[in-house]
Image (tube, rainbow, N blue to C red; front, top):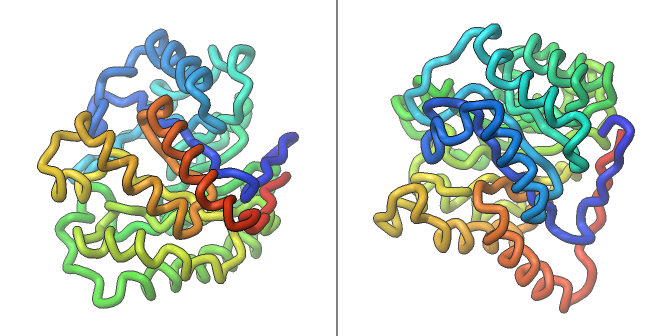
Length: 284
């Protein structure tokens, strides 16, 4: 990822979430001001995150897209202030070419594309140009429509088909395979049963030979089980994080970094008692 390289497999990496939006599902508005966002970014690093994922557009169910100008207005001042302060790599959570380019020009090292190149394949051109890592996520529909879609007849096959297509497209645009990460997209147009199945069968996606990123943090399927509000889903998130690690996740994307750091360390220790995890490299 640009001038950096991350070793994936020696231990599970933690991606900390920073939403600079007024309407994200669990922390909307809390870090909307650049000052508060920068403060939280530094906290996330201090709490033990390996990556910071900054997003300026909510992807909660029903959320409407914002303009390029508005997304840039939210994200870029934060990136500018963090440029000389943060030591961990920054990922920009966007589907927009213009936002991703501006973020990369300010030092971001990863593009986290929740559309998985379906919205704009030029994101792959940017990853190739800057040597940035690219997260290819599977989603059904858009945030505005995804919960209105009929259930997938075979969600695992649908995700696998999308990964195969997106990996081929990314490489056709010049992205090296070592720059690519896959995310099955928990919650994005999936039913309650789909989310549980994806976690339980996560290992089937190891056949693609790329690192797996999983983001179960505070998701509604956890609330469905525990009947708790998003901010009260820490223990449920912890259980989902452990399940993801045991099924082959290399990176977990979470809001509660401090708490999940201990969860990840214990899960890794249990796994490594049986021998080292498979190595996968992510490099630019």
